[in-house]
Image 1: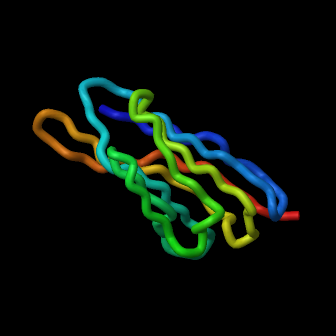
Image 2 (image 1 turned 60 degrees about the horizontal axis):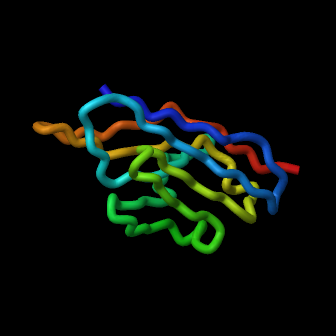
Length: 119
């Protein structure tokens, strides 16, 4: 069993910054692509950014130039550096990981961390 635990959310003023972390714990696993998703009240969950095991990244256009996704493969930890935050970035942010064992591939999700951008 693998657990993903997010941290780093909070309340920030417009134009401010936050850094989210997502730590994977468990045993006998290998992580492939990881990603951050978000869900605002009354809206569907949307993909924010992804990063492959070899470091290739992709992000939605609305966060390009403001958000940076990265990972520490040795520590099984995913990060999202969010700068120039806007009120429309307010949402619960979830991390996601493809987890491989010797026989299976499973998508795991964290419990989410709230990000609120407001003055």
